[in-house]
Image 1 (cartoon, helix red, strand yellow):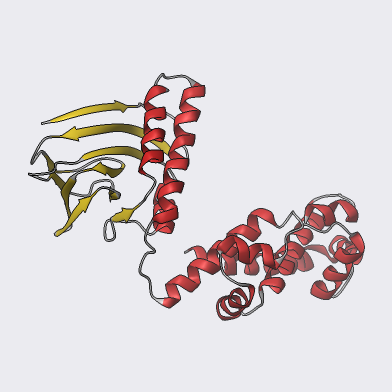
Image 2: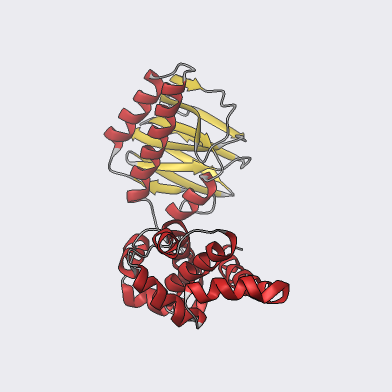
Length: 300
């Protein structure tokens, strides 16, 4: 038996992270669940006591300060200790980014256990979720926001997934490329990219040279100039507006970078496109497509 306080939410809308359920349970000795499946991700965190968690043929003995993940449609079993039964909280969630976030945190069915010393804060978050339980947009936004904070706290103390070096390197490069894709329009520098992926600049340089055959600075510049070339062809924006749109506050610096990459100024490039006809346009478009395909290979 258990004394459980729980809520389930019917989420009709999709999202990157969507809360499905949450709750808190104080169990009696040897109280168990499963073996059974759940249709969403489910994280349990032990507030006190002890218990056993079993998944994929492995057993984990857990106590206060530890938690575990059950992925959708994974057969799992867990049971309270006979002498010191556990009290735990849980959140169930789904969303388009749920798998990606958990992978980045290093938590999965093959590595399902994590530790966190922030039990009081995790409990406060779940309490807040349950207190704002009505089907209204303000409460819905609040619950899903609290879910992100809940996961961020776990991420701060979660284990690093065991990967071989090529996998780690590819992850760093992929994250760096994603950051550049999202922020090329801002005046970011390579140091900003390195800080975002939490590695030093020299290591980032080595990873890019190995994966992309260019430095991070060359990639950032090439990406910006590629976007600028698209705008020169598809819009009538001024050179200054295109420069700002691609992260250059100074049109002179932009023009210099464009000339070094394309062999001509932005104005000359636009004129070439206008007078070059279909063949030349296709050549420029192919260059852009080849570069984008190189980026997409990192995400495959």
